[in-house]
Image (cartoon, rainbow, N blue to C red; front, side, top):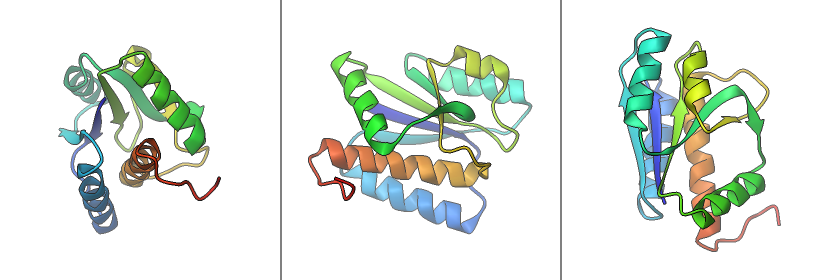
Length: 146
């Protein structure tokens, strides 16, 4: 299953750039994961760009209003998607002010990375870390929580 992560503009904060680079490198060997960026704009312009870029994918909005899953729960969902023969999944990380309602409504699921407020560039790094962790679990690596 291909994984597409779409975010608004490349990270400008040094720690976020470093984190994205680290996880892109780690993920390269584990599976088909692509990070794409759309241009900043109004909430509706960003929503349009993200929806266009994720066409044909199972769409997951990363948003504080979403379902908060543990790593193992996310792994279970991932396996379910594989069993359903989902070919592409897209995670949509919104801008600083969050996603437009139209984007959330167009997505198949909404995933929260936690109940606390998180800077959107940090959210991208956290999401990449979780995608990396899921891929390592799928590849048979041990999980330190087991």
